[in-house]
Length: 163
Image 1 (cartoon, rainbow, N blue to C red):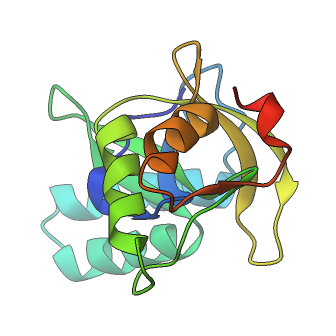
Image 2: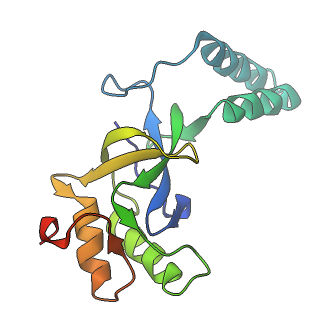
Image 3: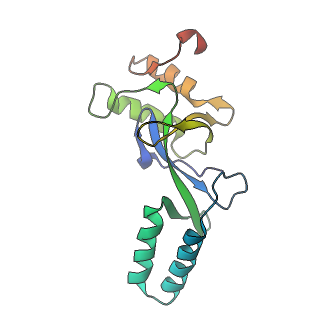
């Protein structure tokens, strides 16, 4: 299960960082024993008010691609961080014409919402290539419909598949 998408983690119109709750049985993530050990040691360090050790353990957890987030009841949740690239969409990069508009369109569509991913491996930059669903809605199609009006997102498959 994916947690809500933080709008601050949406980089541009075709990429984002998402967090998956590793305790959810639907999560594809198997947490290595070393990460579990660090999380427990961090919890004990915080309880003992050894914040230097707790911060060092937090840094090691982050470096391994995990984060500790606060849940809705203020509980700590271990999540796996994934960098995701929307498969089939090529939006302008930030700093290019319409780059900011593409990012804002994606934030408006998914910011604060939970998503479902169907992945197809990784791109040359190590990001997951994924079809993304918002409920039963195919996000890439929605992003193209929203953005084509401003003519700044291009679909990499024939347009007949989008209509």
